[in-house]
Image (cartoon, rainbow, N blue to C red; front, side):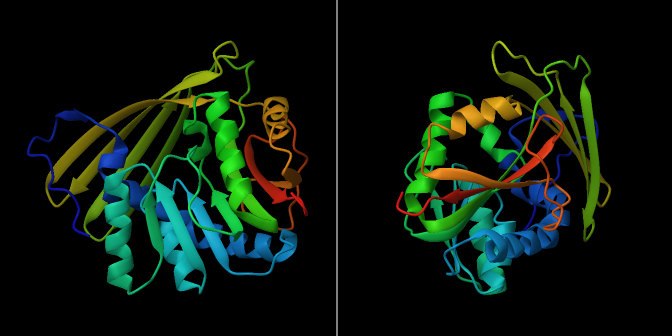
Length: 272
């Protein structure tokens, strides 16, 4: 899984989707992989009424959780629309001698295979679905392939429509001789359009070369009431618990607008 060749200029900024640089994306998000995987196992044990080891991950990205859950003995299927991410994920599986199924697909498309005991989609990937109809189609597609009593662990940031502040997040991670700095700038959410604009700058230093990339995209916004309204359109799923991004199974939270980092447990109703 060799990283892309560094850009020759230390000052140039490339405008591209960070999904085109999966190695750097993977370095930034890998820090919480073990914590997230532990939580998924705890959630399966506590909340699922089905008792299998079949997992679906929509929007699996670089495949870090696909590989981790496969290494823990689960039968995993991951989907993503990015061919670059899937190629990186397959290379990781080969390198670790692991088996999992990776499929190129949009999140709102019918999910492959099933039934699954656990589905999960973390770090706000769900918010890439910019239309209500697509978000509803996604939830329904997951419900369709969950086993009765199976759970969907869905993590995303809720929006505070009263804020006028630009939000900034900063991470730094290293792997080998590659150091990645990630700065994400989020504009205030707009209630009328249900959108927020984001900008990410990655600064990557490898040996003596510096590469900088910039990605801009939009997220769909939700407050607690807006998500409850969406969930009501998919009656096969019920909200059974809420946690936050600390991934502590014993810390159950009220699902309201005080919960910024929402980590929701949705369960497929028996007979649905």
